Length: 139
Image (tube, rainbow, N blue to C red; front, side, top):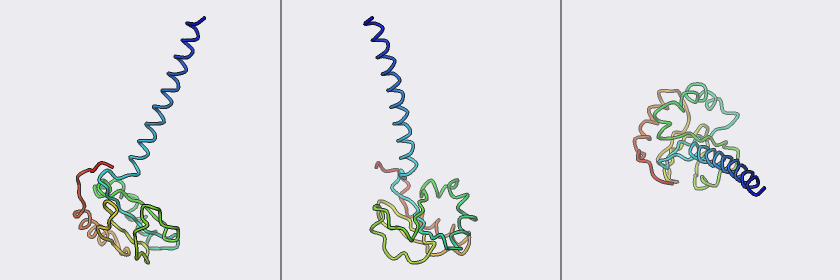
């Protein structure tokens, strides 16, 4: 009988360990998708009533995650009408949408105010991305 109980405990602990490992893997996968590894990101301030935000979403937003820029500057969208997230409390002067702010280590590298087409956006973003450290930094 004691060996049967040991087998049951061992089976249960293996099941719990597999579940725990799975949960930890999901947690780290989720976090890795949220936190840019180099401490940099592109924050887009938008509004549901903004036609230029919609244009950006259609022309750039769909392909942005697949670009080299997205590897350096993962996109985070913030609704201008919502309270600022705690990590962006220091951001000031966002009045117009869309406004794109390149952030590195909780400091503004630069911003693009407005959207008047893909060429305009990619040109300015390229200049800002070149000002960002490309070396991953531990968080």
